Amino acid sequence: MPFRSIFDAGDVMSEFESAAINCKFIPLIWKHVIQNPNCELDEVPSLPSAAYILLQSKFKPLTSTLHSVTDSSDRLTTKLLIKLGNGALVESVIMRYDTRLGKYAGKPRPGGPRSTLCISSQVGCKMGCKFCATGSMGFKSNLSSGEIVEQLVHASRFSPIRNVVFMGMGEPLNNYAAVVEAIRVMTGSPFQLSPKRITLSTVGIIHAIKKLHGDLPGLNLAVSLHAPIQDVRCQIMPAARAFPLVKLMDTLQEYQRNSQQKILIEYIMLDGVNDEEQHAHQLGNLLETLEVVVNLIPFNPIGTLSQFRASSQQNVSRFQKILRGTYDIRTTIRKEMGQDISGACGQLVVNQSDKRATEDPPLLPDIEDLQLR
Ligand code: SAH
Ligand code: SF4
Image 1 (cartoon, helix red, strand yellow):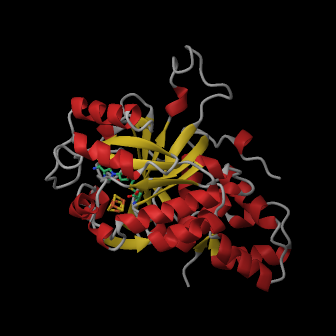
Image 2 (spheres, helix red, strand yellow):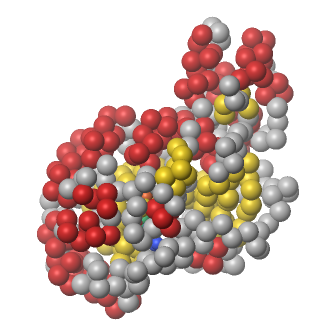
Image 3 (tube, protein in one colour):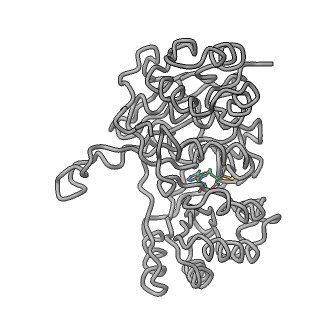
């Protein structure tokens, strides 16, 4: 039996319970590992002796390693390439949205710089969206909940993370149990991320969305809609056939009735495919009865054998104007970050030039954010 990650919460809890060890020690172990990522588990102080024997025989502090770290030229984005226990590589991207001076009347945001971490839930993805680099790899494997949490542990060495978005590799709702468990760990002690600062982005797996609010109340939901009618959606997202738009919209209505939260609608702008005036009107009508924020995403062609082109600036702003002006829908245009390091969403390009040495991590975790309760 290979060693499991100490962040695989379900496994650790069931082992502790069957050995009659109090589970209250688990967050203490996590806190120690976060502060000392190179430690051994027998170095965690003040545990019952039975815990040391169990931990040493079944668990490792981290099962993944930092393979490479690449900063974008403006240093606002850092891509972590993480090697899993099975040798596969996944990416996580740190985006320092809030550190930009000038954003709030020339002053940094109160509370200091805080970053958003984009994490992966699978190696590859079986949904096969035609514009997505991850989709072109096919599905390779699921991450365990511990491997999902470990991305946050690695990233916390570089930046204090306040927001997490599941917009890296994979379809999180196709790895439902592990993703739910990982989010529960992230929102508990010692990470204490607020659930409303965690955004799960999905292509629209209807049966999973139906369970989501019950399992993770307060979570932010983002839906990759990308087209206002079933026909166009099927052209660019083969999975849309299994999850028809009408049923998806009914499911989102139900989700919103229960959660009482806005839903983020992601819409990738593809020239001549879904970016015309009629599409904006169709989308406006489709979303009329939902409370949403629409995020228009510039298409990033890196890493895809692409039949698509990005929409012109003109088309993007026309689309935004229609949604705002005619339908009164809050509509933003996603700022492109980290393109020079292939760190944009949906892109996995293993380019190892220009990377930082990982042997010398620059910063310790920001412990201030990891209060133990
Ligand atoms: N599987 C989930 C989450 C990962 S993809 C989902 O599809 O929602 C995260 C986001 O990146 C999605 O909105 C996806 O459509 C977008 N994306 C994928 N490929 C892209 C590309 N080439 N350019 C811009 N965005 C892309
Ligand atoms: Fe999978 Fe999301 Fe890429 Fe589609 S866009 S292939 S669902 S990762």
